[in-house]
Length: 127
Length: 127
DNA sequence: CAACAATATCTTGCGTAACAAGGTATATGG
DNA sequence: CCATATACCTTGTTACGCAAGATATTGTTG
Image (cartoon, each protein chain N blue to C red):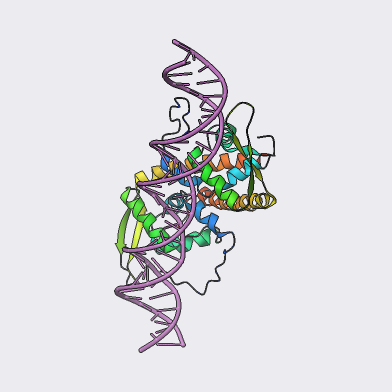
């Protein structure tokens, strides 16, 4: 478990839905973050939160299984690196298949989001 | 199980993600469809698909549990109606709490979708 | 009329994935 | 030397979508 600074549980209201929304989006998120170059797991956790101003967050206990799935699916390759100072890091890099999957998932997510947006923007008319 | 016409399994590719994307969205979808007036379960299944040109679909085996959750949470009330001809129907209607929840979920979904859109639109820059 | 399809409801069991909460190990600062 | 930060991993719980079944009534067609 990552022990962060005494974080005041920031987004604690309206909680349970956000969890479900991550389903089906997390792999896309990770693949996208890796599209600009390799990164290691702990880095992804922190950078995702920074990049989205806390709007999208994930714990390391959630991320590592995601990375395993991506690796087993052949979408990323791994490389260990032990810096002169610090704990060894496991770097992930997109494969060609991963890049193709990223495009596929992006299209799928966009289609879903567009359909949702069109639906919930409809003004009440008889069902 | 609802036995439809020999439907050719339309959207059969890219399958597993769409399932997960419905998580956290289905209740919002149903609440929205009920915002224009009451409807019965079977009607929601067919109308959702029509309204979105098949982009959003749900089976009845999925919908009924959703409706129970909404009822137990006090977001909808039910009313049975037996038409002169036809099978009895269970009509669902939004409560005030349901309407408030619809607004809350809409805000939450929009915030999530906006964050996702901003993220996946970013051009590759160093992570 | 028998047989089947369509309408409409409900239930059970399975698989999957997010997460909390635990663990290990190395380096750094007081 | 002890707490904190960095970095990895694992287990168990929980929730939900869905396939696949069941049931009952009505309409249709050979």
